[in-house]
Amino acid sequence: MTNRANIVCLGAGRMGRGIAVAFAYAGHQVTMIDVKARSAEDFAKLEADALGEVTKTFASLSKLGLLTEADVDPLIARVSVVPASQSGAALSEAGMVFEGVPEVVELKREVLGSASRQVRPDTIMASTTSTILVDDLSGAIVNPRRFLNVHWLNPAYLIPLVEVSPGRATDPRHRRRGQGTARRHRQGPGRLRGDARLHRSAHPGAGDERGRTHGRGRRRQCR
Image (tube, rainbow, N blue to C red; front, side, top):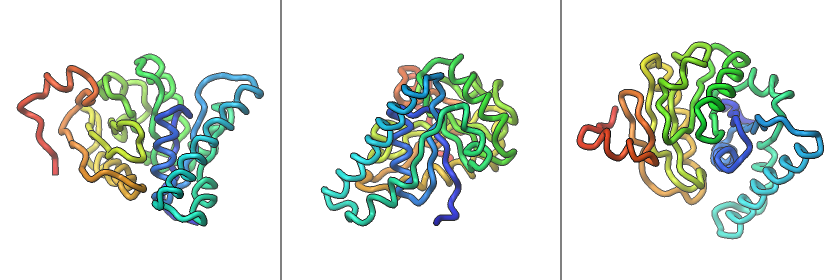
C-alpha cells in the first residue's frame, strides 16, 4: 500500500484515463468518476472500456520494457471507476482532484462545484482546461483558495505537464502543494524530459490561440 495522496479524476474519458495511468504508476490510488448520468448497463460498458484502456496501456508499456510483467496487475489494481452517485467516498478521501470534462464552462463549473462540496477543506482542486481561465471557473468552487489550472496534453502519461496557473483567489501555499503533487506524474514510464510552465496568474492553456498570443513576450516561470 502507498501513503501517497489519493487522486480523483472528474471524468473517465481520454484525459482521466491518461492521468490515471500516470499517477497509478507514481504510486497513487486513482478513482475516475463518471460525471454523466447513465443506466447501470451503460456505466458497466464505460467502466469496462476505461479499465480496459488502462490495462492495455500498462501491458503495452510492459512489452516495451518500461515495466515488468509483474508490475502490471498491481498498477491496474490502483485504478477504479465509479458513477457520480457513488463518488462520495472517493472524494472524501482525495488529496487532489483533477477535472477532465469537455471544454464547456457551464459543465466544468457544475462538476467542480459539486465535487468541491464533498472533499476535505485541504483537498487541492484543479482543472485541466486548455482554453478557460481559472477565474472563470473558481466562482463555482467552495474555498477557491485551493483551486488552480493544471494543464496537460495527451497522452498524459507520456507528455510532460504543460502549465500550472493560479487564479486571483488561489492561495500560494495551495498552489505550491498542487504543483508538488502534479509534478509526481513525471515518474511515469517513458516520459519526455521537460518541466511545466508556471504562471503567476490565471492564464489560458498552450492549446488556446489566446495563450500563444496574449502572453507572448511576458511569460515567466515562477520558481
